[in-house]
Length: 212
Image (cartoon, rainbow, N blue to C red; front, side, top):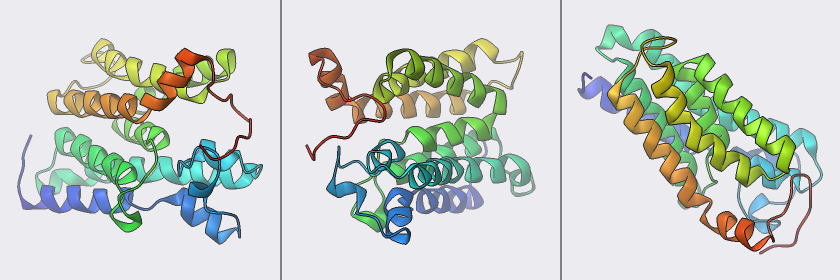
């Protein structure tokens, strides 16, 4: 991994891109209530869906994923000219993910980062993103819990990366560490969901609930 000033610029820029809270931006643009004021209070696509506006939820999901994918894609495809490699691309993705969790533009109160993490994985390798996304989808369809699906995907993503490393995609130590970091942070951000899953009080996909 080559770490120098272009890398620092890329990582900082990635954090700023990640700090764009599209759940709030999309809701405001569509004349909806701030997603931090209802449901779980989490500014993410799942909570926006609780408003009943599927278009807003889909737009939030896609934009949150794109802001994770874009920095990684740019570094992976154009970073070599600036001495940047896959390790820097992974750190840029991690920075975008941290921006979503702790956005400088929104008082450092962000979402849980599932869509943004998915975008990062897609940027590193589309097959890795597809495998992880497939895991999320299967768990979500069977159990109807977005949080459980997210936790399962977070658990399997680093495992998939190791299993396919050197066979399907290039294995990079920095990328693996960044991936594990994202998985741990995702689990931490879902700690209240984990408690509700254990207690049997977690809300299912598509349900509406009062502000917690």
